[in-house]
Each structure stands twice: as structure tokens, then as C-alpha cells.
Image (cartoon, rainbow, N blue to C red):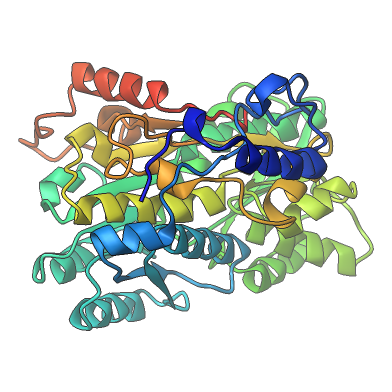
Length: 427
């Protein structure tokens, strides 16, 4: 096995990859193929995702091959299908096998599923807890068997992964409050600062939905002539969002725009309007094929892209590293990942990048075990500050954050990950 750096890769292999990138993204590459002379809006390519010599077979031979699992809240949701695709691609790149499991939007089933996963000998799993209180039961199922896991989006306030124990390897999310601010500001500016809007939220108590709503509330203070007529919970599905939107169209006399906690919710609202032959500007959060097609075709205003494929893949890389001896520091166990705004100016670019061939990531290069010195996250990762994340939640009496969440530690980890965000293809 050879473990080459990008600079040591054969010219013929590199040129083949550059040809693919040229045809797929119409980029004019500079000498050596590693610098883009020009880049389309919203897409900056700094390398050609050249493989470094770690083949899946190499990895499986050196580290072994095991089944890694994901407990998703519903594989029917477009964003979750994309995350699962990322998880499957990462597992394959790492020489592992992959099992996605759907909780079918049932919190009790999710806990039972995870207990069953743990009992079958799966050595690590990722999950999206349907409800924040579920994290405790999920952690117990993992801790009883010494199995590391990662979680995203939902988490009880004022309880870090360190507070649970070493099995909780990482809590990840996009900065949902910032994403809520972003989509609200985009819609309100489109409405020229005046009008009546509604917010279709997710499940009551879902951390992500609550934080996105908090971001909307912050921006509403800046736009005195925007009225939020109602906030309506949904179960995150298109079907439920469509039904809720149909009811609101019958009960609210004026709706000038729609804020949706997720793209699936936003698409449900779009479907309700389409059936009535009506159109409103809709904004949402997540990013994926169906919503980007609607945006490209002028039927939807825009979406905050949460890079679903990357996140689903990175969680599996993190678990691979932990299984093979890497120990994350506390501030590495709570991290935000990057987002971008997608509208009609760049939707086609993202559609091509994620739905026209292989995913644009080298998952093996993300690994701290495979690349202890030159690992590359290929997306921005920023440590969460619990004091900011949970600013709206009362801190329990006597609670103190564990060591490693102080400002100096957060700054140190932030710099480390900024230095290792080498491939900055999406900005």
C-alpha cells in the first residue's frame, strides 16, 4: 500500500480527475490542475479531489471492516435520504459496510432501533434524535455496550457530550439560529420590508426547529413592517406541512411569504399553493435536489444549504477515527458545520455538484487516523460555544461546564479546524 500526498499522485491519475471536474463544472484549471483560474458563483475549487493512495481495500486490510449504522428519523425525508447517501459513500470509501435505519418519525421506535443495533454487535452508530430528551436513552444504550456514537441537531440544553460520557463522540449541527436569521432576512428583503408571513416549524421541542425560530424572531425585530401571522408545528414531512398550509390558506386572509424550518416543510407548503394555482415566495433550510430544482425554475425563493451529503459522510468518518484510537477534545465534540445560501443564481451549480455523478468529497482525506498531519475537512467546522448555543435556556442551579469549553479551548480548536479546512470548494 502507498500513502501518497496529493503532490505525489501520478500525473495521469490527476489529469483524469481534472478532466472530470472540467466537464462537470466548466472550470478553467491552472497549471498542474490544482488552482482554478475562474470559478462559477458560489463554487470555489482548490483541488481536484485527487485520491491519496488509501483505497477502501487498503483501509479494510489495515484496520478491518465492520458494519456502521445510522438511525435516521425518517428515510422518506429528502434531506435524510441525502445524508444516508453520504453515509453510505463514506463507509464505502473507508472499506466499511453501512446500515441505515428509519425511526419512521417515532421517538419510541428510534430508541428501540438503537438498542437493537447495539445488541447486534454494530460497533458504532450515528443518529438524529427525534426529540432532545431521547439523547439520554440513546446514550444509555451505547454506554452499556461501550459503543461510540455521534448525534446531530437535537440535544438537551446545558448537557454536553462530556457530561454524558466518552461514548458520546460528537454533537453536530449547522448553526440553526444563524440559518433562521439568514432565511428570514432573505425573505424580508425580497418583500421590501413589509408584509405578512407565516412560519411552518418542525416538531414541538425539536432543538433545530426552535433555534431556527429564535433566529427568525431576532430578525423580525429589525423589520417593524413584517408581521408574523402564526407559527405552526409540523412533523417535518411534506404531507403534514401541505395539510397545515392548506388550513392556513383557508384561515389567514393575507400570506405574503412563507418561512419553513426545513425544505421538506417548504415543499409541502409549495404543493398546497400549487394545487390552488397560487404562488408565494418560500424560504427554508437544508438543501437538496427537489428544492434546488424548484429554485432553479423560479418557483421557490431560496434555501440555506446544510450540505446533507457531507454531514452524513463526516459522521461516519468521525466514528471510524474514534474506533481506531483517536480521542477528540471536548470542544471538538460540539461543532457547527458550514452553510451557504442557494437561490436562482447558483442552484444549478449545486444540482450539478451533488446529483450528477460521484459526491465531490474525498472522505478518506477527512480522517484523523488515515491522515494525522494533512487531514482536510473539506467543509468549515466551528466549535460551538455552549454559553451562546443555550443562551435562551436557563442554566440549572450549580451547573458548570466541563473543562475544555472555556473561551481559550474553543479558540484553539477553531483555529485548528480552520487550518485543516484546505479544500474550500463551496463558499
